[in-house]
Image (cartoon, rainbow, N blue to C red; front, side, top):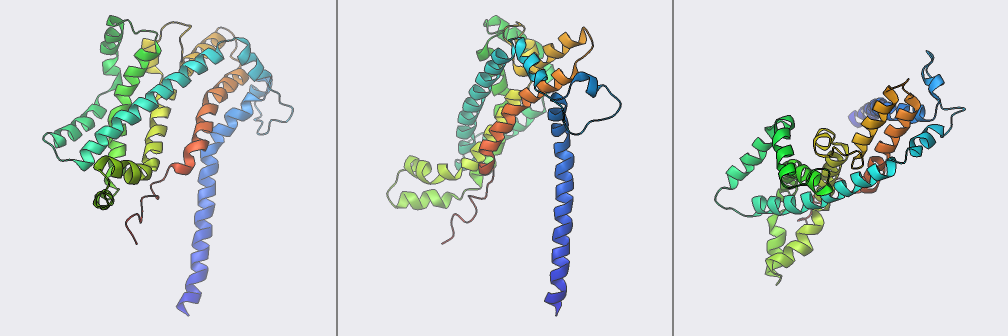
Amino acid sequence: MSSIIRTPRVRASRVAYGVIGVVVALVWIFPVYWMANSALLPNVVLQSKTPVFLPFGGSFDNFAAVFQGGTFFPALGMSVIIALVVVAFCLFFAFLAALAISRFRFRGRKSFVLAILFIQMLPAEGLFIAQYKLMASVNLLNTVLGVSIIYIAAVVPFTIWMLRGFVAGIPAELEEAAMMDGLSRTQAFLRITFPLLAPGLVASGVYAFLQAWNEFTVALVVLQANADQTLPLWLRGFIRASASKAIDWGQVMAASTLVALPVIIFFLFVQGRMTSGLVSGAVKG
């Protein structure tokens, strides 16, 4: 009798949670939709007092106007190269450091972990002068290498902290069992542990990618040449050019959509691996 009474309550609670989840998702996605919707509407419609929620009668003229300047694709290439370099090196260095912290006991281990936390507390703005002088002294201003080095140094500490949790969540008994079967420590790690780290590597890679893709202030300091700009700097220059006259919000929204689109595509490719559920139950059976 109690189970019969409990079932409708469970169903009602699930429906309520589902409705709440849908409402939260709609609130979260509305700014993105509004940006894309505004990118398809002419500036006259956007400046009217009546909001237009559906792009009926819209066009891709704003996107065409953005492409006419010929500066989007160089900025896109700059951002893609920097993001890929940062992701690759951050995952490499953070992976080795997280493995060392989680699997080995050595002198200074706790101090190293605390140093990672303290580095995260340093305000980025307080390092701008030192970073600029350092890049200028080695002739790395306005270069992919220069800005990538700064991004890697800023992202690696938190990436180490993220991967440390994933590595620690994989039982060491898996590697020990493989070593008892005749594998070396390196072979046991590569064949057993490394595949289980895929969710952690993907999650850390997404974090590094987003940090490198959306970063603005460091790029503003290091990349001063107009020909060497990332997409956030390009978008700023685009808005400043529009500010000399009446701002065409349709073109600004089209430019913003183009900046956000690669991030959305990247996330769609990797979102299926962003879970640590592959680790659960690995030692059962």
